[in-house]
Image 1 (tube, one colour):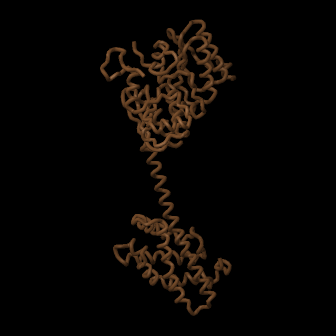
Image 2 (cartoon, each protein chain N blue to C red; image 1 turned 90 degrees about the vertical axis):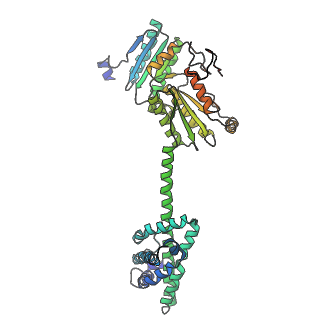
Image 3 (cartoon, rainbow over the protein chains, first blue to last red; image 1 turned 135 degrees about the vertical axis):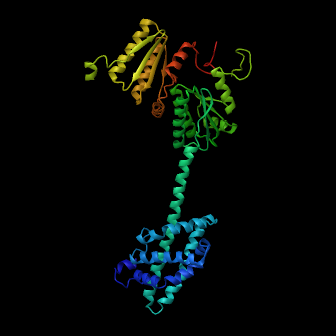
Length: 299
Length: 139
């Protein structure tokens, strides 16, 4: 970057840009207030938009002052980070894609550039070009900062939701004295199956359960990894001294399991949750159906 | 090891006989010498008194390694040779998870949630190869 090579002398392009930004901050803010990005976010009053624009111009001037126009981590940006995040979020809510927000941010540059050219008309062409380049780099960095902030917000949201999903999606239900069930919903990955296993085993101890039913009706696909997780859970339940029944195997899943050649031979399976419950009740000797002694239908 | 020699009683796991069943309660760590002694005690007692079942209560075991898993499997195998059924009772969730993660699912071993349930399951007639509805068969 040329502004680094020329050192910290007052005449560097970055400092020229800084002086220009400070001199013209009011006009730039006024022009930005008419741009879609500011106009649509700050709908209450034009004053508010101008105020926000002025804050951004100030931040840019501070960054230019520190000679770090290409550095998104420059200290000057911290002040406007939150504001940029709010603006980005507002535009996303309005249904704009990230690319569209980025191009709206890019649209902030031309008005400033025009002002700069008008201001430095009398300067040498080289110095004008250098200043213009510095300004362009600075605006590019601003765009980067805004995008960075938006992305980190999204990341935080995703992390929070993943945690919530882990907590929410694994209820253990007591179906009967000594029978607990876990309805599994969604894809089973290692982290989730670990949580399922822990909650299920603790429930087995707490409820003195002799049977645990794993219902996979809500699991969209069963591949070898999911099957392995299921087998592990079944084995752990068995080690605890309870019996595990896997239920909710849809026809398509039964076919997939056979096609993949997965061996679920040691796992007791039933088609539906009702079948599994009937099986467990039967084994507990708690038949609901009125029948002659020993006449319950066994499979 | 030195401790085991100076306090021979402390290094020994008691093997209690309750009617037709042997009750063994494991607590804390099981050292090599203790495990060896325990296996010997169990097999000798089975032969001497002709019991038909062994219940190993491991509810006091908080940590487990592959060694303990192997000892349990060996006890079960040697008891089976002497015509006694072995039931492991009271395994903690953390222990079960560790054993499964170690790949030790102990397929030949019978398990029960509590010692009571273990005694109950031994009192029931032999279910043969456990499959289908062998378990809750009430007379």
